[in-house]
Length: 75
Image 1 (cartoon, rainbow, N blue to C red):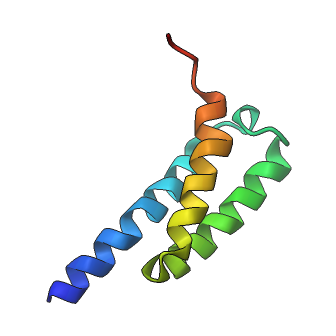
Image 2 (image 1 turned 180 degrees about the vertical axis):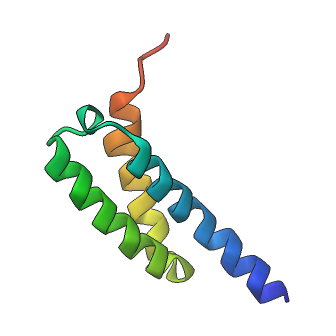
């Protein structure tokens, strides 16, 4: 049972990033719809490789490349 909770906890960030990517407008991505489609593919890879901790690196790349770019800067 502990392993299931651990695996779910490792999968959750990648799954939430995929949901975020699917709900974001294409204007938030640097390359438009093509970039959005490629990020979806990478986030699917992240969901599969999350237990190996490789998927979390992909999620961090998504965060720095898309989410921070689309967020307004506040000082």
